Picture 1 (cartoon, rainbow, N blue to C red):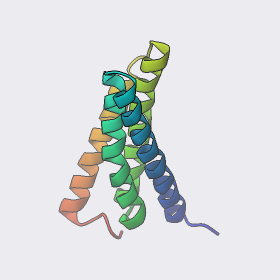
Picture 2: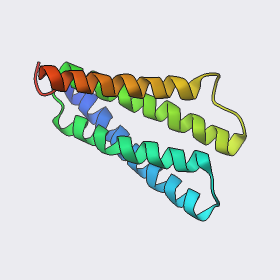
Picture 3: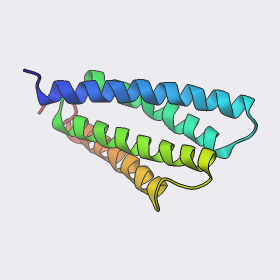
Picture 4: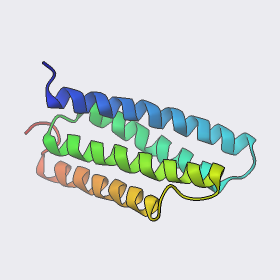
Length: 124
């Protein structure tokens, strides 16, 4: 039977790979397709958060690390997807999607900082 920690670690590694790949594609599209603020922002967000998700998926063993990682993955996905929808469809996913995703990323980073301060990122 797979433990909850194993599943969340696999989800974080999946999210890391998707974020990294999307970041590279968005950077290439922004570079070759003109100057798009949305594509540049997607690239920056995904390429910044992908490695963090990778680290949390591989090394974060505490409940706080996993929760922060999942929140970071969700926030990154919502934020980047909203910018992508804006780029290609001309409107956002839903009202407040980008601030929701951005807020989730901020809370995740705050949880990571808290976990580091109290030593709760490696083990429970």
